[in-house]
Image: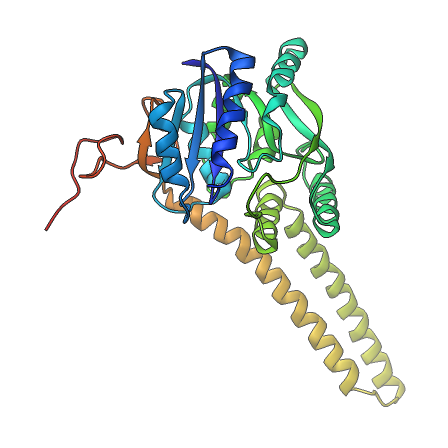
Length: 338
């Protein structure tokens, strides 16, 4: 075990990695002396990120470099780093340097003085982000807060400091569709906020376009709330009541001998009912799809290569056997050759 682990999921971050490593090293030494490790998780990058990690690891024994077999996504890459790190205290941070590593000593002090298991960053400002992104993030966090029974902090990302016992509780949760900031809130313990100003990305482009943000929001909402299903049931009850009133009106008009103007109103009712039915089926499909993925019980991630010391075993993933080109991962086998 080490005193401190810093876990960083990385996807196409070759422009940030040298500066990131330098600043993380300085922050770790300031907060934990020489008893620390930095865990870089290469999430199937298509640029030179893994080569840079290998080069840094060759010169820095404090670096654990993990190369996943493919792009698993930010939350699963982060899960892999958390699963394989060895620290008593764990810092989660993204590779883009929007969350300043220099805040680590102050966060450690807050954890000690508040006797907390989690110190989570709360964004006072979000430099370098568009109004649309700020507005959608603001609305998403508040919608999620109203829709779930878990007290998920507003305006807080994955940037946080955790104790080992909090991390062990998190790693006991094996679900596939992971919303880690919500899962950390769910485990409880004493959790305190740490306000800070988020900076602009150091280099490169965002790895969360609108489509990924929408998928992430849907995972968060369906993973922590049954409110969409309740919304569907409420819509069904309302439409049933409306249909009953319409039937009563039709019966009254027929008994009164009044002609009914049928086509427009009929089409309107059919379209509304059809749209609501498709919406309800989509919600049911989303929840059933989650059940299907969970029922397969596949490992959450697969590691292709590891450089550096790690935990003896994984809880949630799989480490592939060593290949003919690498003897560092978890097995002694060789890649078959023709």
